[in-house]
Length: 223
Image (cartoon, rainbow, N blue to C red):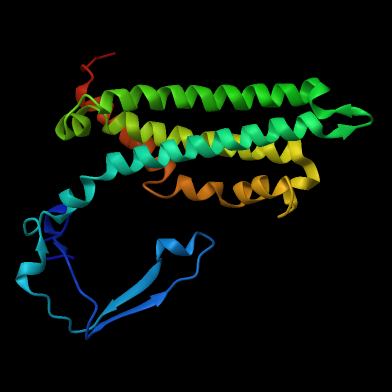
């Protein structure tokens, strides 16, 4: 809630309990209802001063404090989903017969799987490297040194999902449109994978953040 002037420095974090003057209305989305997406309206609501979280006009820092961990978690979850889809594609290609031969016998299908595996495993290796660094850093060190890499990792994980979804649909063909049988996993992923590229910061925002963080520590050079 804005308690000061313009900009980040005028925002405070308040705990507002449900009561008189507070009303909510559910917003239906294609995302999970567990997210609790809702329109919240306040009308002449009084908030006790003791409900202030942290310091006045420094609420933005509280919100930002958890972003790195949140984005890391989203990236790791996205990578796991990507790997699941690759596994489903391999199983499908192994058993699906076309003109008496499995899809896996076709070079074009093997090439698709090769590129999907390469992208997933390279992103996973990067995530493992960042995770190891996080385990040996303080919160302040993570914020200073890993904010950019984590943002880029999250961006890369969702860009990989776009590639995975596109190729998975091509491999499954018409089955990718069905909500039952082996195609159900692909259908759901193709319908929902894009959510990851929005939550925790859009891809373009995270890409810009990654470069800006690098600019802070990279030596100046004049061309």
